[in-house]
Image (cartoon, rainbow, N blue to C red):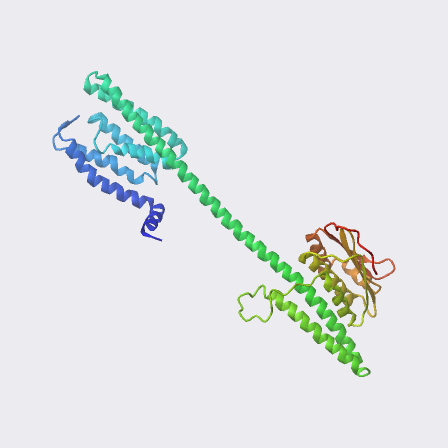
Length: 414
């Protein structure tokens, strides 16, 4: 910031101090000049040979200008009052200190309330008329010169008043723009906060799906390995391998997600550009669930299509959450069917089991945090999720996700 910018900021923050300094300097300069130019002027008390009265009224006219921005109405009242008194008992114009009247008109037009800014023009014209009256008294009927003087002074007043209104409009425009900028900055900060909150919510959903599914698989494997450790050591070793593999995969996914929140760590071991799971990873998800001892069948219908990353991740996570709920609530030895049907305008996912999940879900009315997360994910892409117990026992989750219209009719495979 250079010297001029610092001075401009100081003047904006300290208008009273600046006006006081300027008014004091003007009094020291214009007071003596008024005494010099108005020597031997005729006053009501007689001839002012040394210009003392002119110097006094010069100070009285200029001093109120120290309040021209902080108290413009009071300042203008004092200036006009002293100018009127000076016109009554002395010369009509006190040169050069009478310029204070024009400065007062300008200040009221710029800084005073609107009613005062509009009234000051009438006050200036009235003051001009009063000056003309006293001038005609001294010139004994020389109306031509009086009219010229009145027209000139009145035109100067109106010009100064118009310039003040223009300055006022500019100040209000700048103030409005600053307020808009402030509002925009606040809104931008709010948008950033909302975006961060949305990102944290997304990470929380991802973490819920990863942790819940992985821990469910690991718990199921650990329980099975514990019982098989004495009778079937080979199965126990397989269970331990599945636990380790599932834990490593979950840890990698968690590091990738938490890396979004720790971008300042230079030696992060994960690659933030690693792809998120998509619909093509459902088969590996089913296979990992199958290794936990649950009978899971995957049925594919229609021709798979390339999905946007967000839609593919939604399809994968809803399938993952459904399988996780089966691991937690379906009971021992359930049979699970995962149906993935690709249509012309939508993709449909059904995950159902024949376990005791219906009884477990009845206690919570099927409205757990997992099911709520499924509905929120599907709603982001215009899809719907239906879940509930099956009539013959078990539980079913159905996802209907709209897709762009395909160019050709898909073939059907099983």
